[in-house]
Image (cartoon, rainbow, N blue to C red; front, side):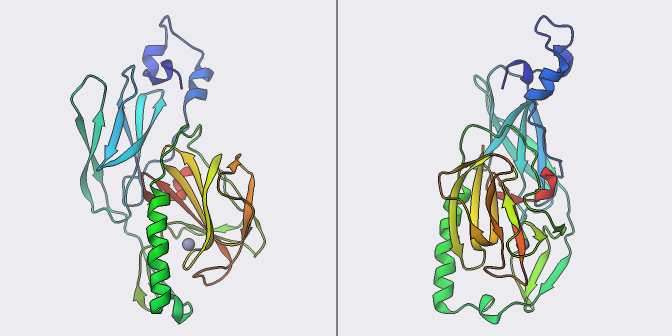
Length: 278
Ligand code: ZN
């Protein structure tokens, strides 16, 4: 990340610091698509100070990257967010903290009704206790923020297959309302290879009640991927994967109606639509 990459493009042209256009483009972490709705992403230009600013959504640090237009915050918006204004707090060295309001629109996600084994909807006391333990564990995993920041904010599809546009669907399992669908489902036969959509470090693996065999990848800067319902897991915690590297195979473990990959992307602890990165 160079200092010149933080300057607006018009300042680069003709200046004594001018660098070839291709170099400026290479320094840009090719931003995801923007969609300011629940489960979407806001891309907020902060400015062109020499020192990198920090940004916070509530008390959660937000990814800030250099772009040709200056320092840019890439903000994950909660699926549970209400339409309206939300404040992004920006801190720059030597200046008072600044609030940038982000306008969140409406997404209008459709309903989805699924039928699964009754024991995966009305949980036994034992399964409920297990799920609560697993949910607490997941909250520690999703809070991971590491360096270096991701070099690219564009992903490869992790497995071939039919991609459903099911992100955000308000779900009913066996007629009962449950959390909205917070990832992308890719239908593929059991055993189909799953690969890293971007470089990352394995930060969690396990067999979970709802998610089945699961791998979490840390791409840096609070950007994470989660892969669920795997048939097999080929990696272990601490492994560093290059983009396209094998991490497991598609399966039907956990709460599923059939074999598929569930892929979630988390940004500042919020599950956002993976399609915005493709
Ligand atoms: Zn899913």
